[in-house]
Length: 93
Image (cartoon, rainbow, N blue to C red; front, top):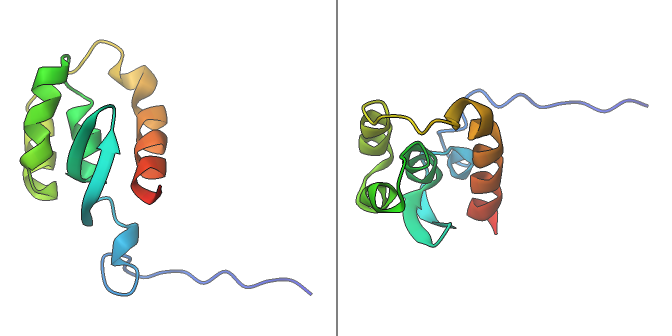
């Protein structure tokens, strides 16, 4: 009477690639359109809206690398999970 949970070995591969934050698709978040959820997330680490805009044209890999180099906004550790949740919701809307 139970149900089975199917474990996805690699959601970066088809047909589950769209589940990855690195999947390239337009994501509108806080007035900017990013090329992926990864780029939108990494941008939110920045302190200003102008700095975030740089991420709009970056690939997922480049945005991840750049996000590791930016000075973090003061509240980042407190808000980062909520930010990711909102970005994933925006991706699928």
